[in-house]
Length: 273
Image (cartoon, rainbow, N blue to C red; front, side):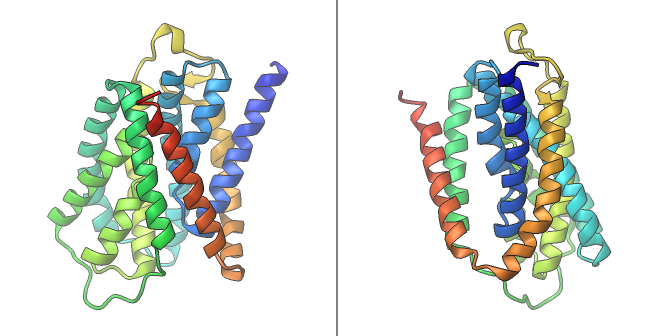
C-alpha cells in the first residue's frame, strides 16, 4: 500500500478513538462523528465526493452494529434492557430503515448532505442543552404499537443518515415510555444494534457504480474502516465513560456542539456553492 493509504488507515483508527471516547464521555452517538470523518477519509482515498458520503453512511452503520452489540451486552448483564420493547422496536425499525436506506441510495447526494447537516445542528442543540435524566415515576409502557411506531420513526433517521437512532430513542423512552434512565440507555443500545444491522445490510447489498467501486468493500461498506473504527471505538468507550465520572463534561459538550454546527454548515453550504 502507498504511504497515503497507510495515513488514511491510521485516520480510521483515530476516528475510532475519538468517536469511542466521546461516546463514552459525553453520550455522543458514534454516527455523528463517524460519518463526517469517514466522508473526508474516503474522499482522500480517491472516491468522488458523492460516493464517499454514501460509503461513510453504510460503513458507519456497520460500525454502530458492533459497538451497540458490545454496549447492549453490558447493559443486559445489569438488567438494563427491556427485551420485548427491543424486539417490537426492531420490527418497526426494519420497515423504516429499509425504506429510508433505499430512498437515501437513490436521492441526490447533495440534498442528502444538506439534510445531514441540518440533523447535525439538531444533535448539537440536544447535546448543548441536555441535562442528566431524572428518576421517572410510573411503570414502563408495554404497548407493542408504541415501540413499533418508535422503531419506524428512528429507523428513518438510521437509514437516511447512517446514524444509530439513539438521538430519537432516548427521549421517547424517557419522556413517553416512562423508562428509568439506565433502562432507557440499555434498551436503546439493543434497539440500535438491530437498526444498524438492517441498515448496514441494505448498504452492503447495494452495488456502487463502476467508478465508485474500491477494494476491500462489500457494497457501500468498507471493511478495513469498519474493523479499525469499531475496534478502537469499543476500547475507548470504556475510558471515556470512566473520564466522565471524574471530569466536568460541560466544556467538551460545548466544543462538540460547536464543531457539529461548523460541520453541518459545511454540508448545508454544498447546496449553494
